[in-house]
Each structure stands twice: as structure tokens, then as C-alpha cells.
Length: 246
Image 1 (spheres, rainbow, N blue to C red):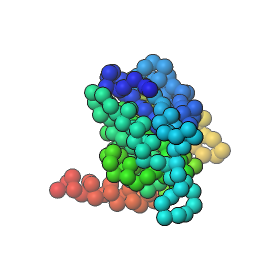
Image 2 (tube, rainbow, N blue to C red; image 1 turned 120 degrees about the vertical axis):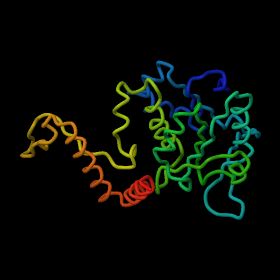
Image 3 (cartoon, rainbow, N blue to C red; image 1 turned 180 degrees about the vertical axis):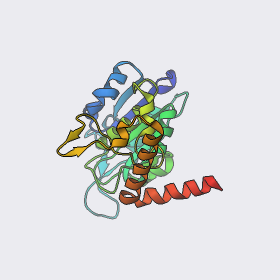
Image 4 (cartoon, helix red, strand yellow; image 1 turned 45 degrees about the horizontal axis):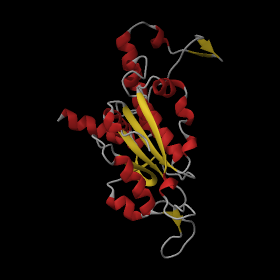
């Protein structure tokens, strides 16, 4: 079993999965991979099939009441979770990647990055026995209104979003403050050389050297793009600004 996160101050992710070989996967490359090699964060995997209690190492069974598919057993997953959490000096949040969970947003990503780490449960088949979710204080998180074949790709996406916010991962931390969702808006457009491409020049204001005008242009474009593409974010942004001005 993996060493517990409580023994170190390093941000630690433990992933419970039937396919631990899927990790680190993409997390072994680029910023996340370099940070993993540098021990800025730790990644542990647990194959919860090893906690099965019968000779066939069964982790699932048919759904009570009938229906298609199979359901992950509460007793098997609970045994894995309890061993991971036992003896930890600092308890990390338990997260189950589920299409019925609350949508993942940047504020939750930031909160996870500021904590000691996370324990992720990757579901398979039709999901997990509801009693596990009710008894272990598990938070359900969704990446969107679609269904994956398992929680592993969602876990990789969540970890990528969190790890890049950890201190020391990004070379220029200032780049993190101007990205989509950081201020409740989608990000403004970007341009680089050549100065004109396919008949389209870089907007002159970006070449003006006037930082105040550039900042105003970028904010205006962020607001416009958010209003047109994500009316839900725009309404929230307007409401939060109105509340702040009171």
C-alpha cells in the first residue's frame, strides 16, 4: 500500500482505480511531469481489486432491482478507502468522479491546490453502491454533461488542473492570473508573430506599448467573449460585480 500523505508536506494525490497503469499517463509529461520528477507533488495509485474478498477477486455485482450493467461493491471500495485514509495526520478530501456530481470549476481547483492533496475514486461500469457515498463523506465531481467509460480520464484532467497551480510548477506564476475563469471571465484572444498573417494584422492596440490601453482592451474582449459564449458565466460575473459595488 502507498505511504500516507500525512508523513510529508508534499501535495499528494492517491488514485483508486481498476487500471492503475493508466497513471501517470499524460501527467508524466510537461509541467506536471517535471513537477512530479522534482517531488513538488506525489502520485500514488491503488488497485482496489486487491481488496476483493473472494477467490475470483470480484469488485462488482448486478444492480439490486435488476437492470443493465454492473455496480461496484461498497465493501470492496470501502476497504481500499479506509486503508488509504487510516493513520493519515492530515485528511485529504475524497472525490468520486461522477457525471451526476457538481461541475468542476476553477475555485474548487484552487481550493484543492491549497490543501494537502486529494484521494480520487475512479468508477467503472454503472457506478458505485450508493451506500459507499453516504458513509464515507465522498464529494462527487463532474467534468461535464457527458459520460466516460471510467473515471480515470476525468481524474487525469482534474489533477492536471490542480497541479499546475501548485507553487513552483509554473515558471511565471503571473500567467495563471489572466487565464479563463480566474476572474470569472473567459480569456481574451492572444496574438504573436508574424505581425500580419493570412491578411489579418495583430490588433494595433497590442503593439502600442500603452499598458493601460492594452489592459482595457483585454478586459473588454474577455467580457464580450464571455457574454456571447457563456451567458451563464456572464450572469454570474455581473451579479458578483453588482454585489461587490453595494
